Structure formats: C-alpha cells, structure tokens
Image 1 (cartoon, rainbow, N blue to C red):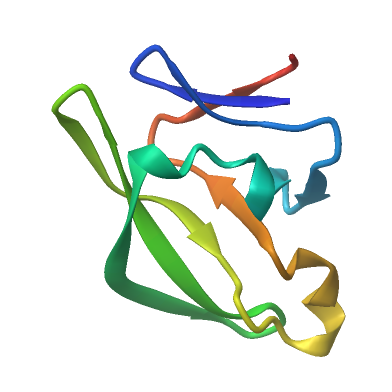
Image 2 (tube, rainbow, N blue to C red):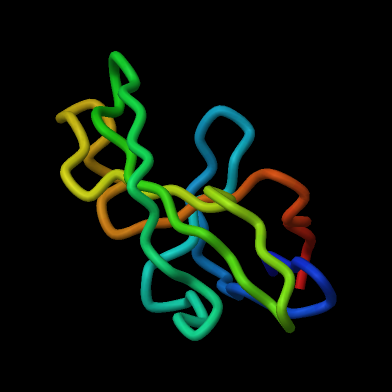
Amino acid sequence: MKAIWNGVVLAESDDTVIVDGNHYFPRDSINDEYFSESANHTVCHWKGTADYFHVSVDGSNNPDAAWTYPEPLPKASHLAGHVAFWRGVQVVPS
C-alpha cells in the first residue's frame, strides 16, 4: 500500500494493519521529511490516546493528516509503531 498526498508518496509498505477501514503503516515505512508533530491528541475508548502529525509537501500543509497510538491500550496493541492517514491522503495499492 502507498499513502499519497499532493503527488508525493508519504509511506509505502506491504505490511499494513487494517483497523476500522484505515491502513496503519509501520513507522519505519514513513518518509519522515514530510511530517512534523502536532499538539493535537484524541482519545479512543479501545485504542487509547492518538498523537497527530502535520504533513507538508512542497509548501502545502495538511494539518493533523496522520495519527499514531504510541502507547495503545491492550486490545489495540497491534497498532503500536504504526501510522494512519486521513484528510485527503490517498491510500492505494502499490
């Protein structure tokens, strides 16, 4: 799978985890140059607290377009070390 925004591949992996219709990419498959930490956090009752990332490509910014669960709750432990996308980021087959 590939995560693409603004014509750039943000992440690519053959080993994503699918939860609630979202592909979670392994953290090491992310192109870090396009990401910066956000101060935004949300809480899911079964996954835990999500941290967000802003995505920036060629001067265009997509705030809070990616998220991760750095310390997921036990039922979501398989999401540790993974990142998912939304807000216009296309996730397509490689």
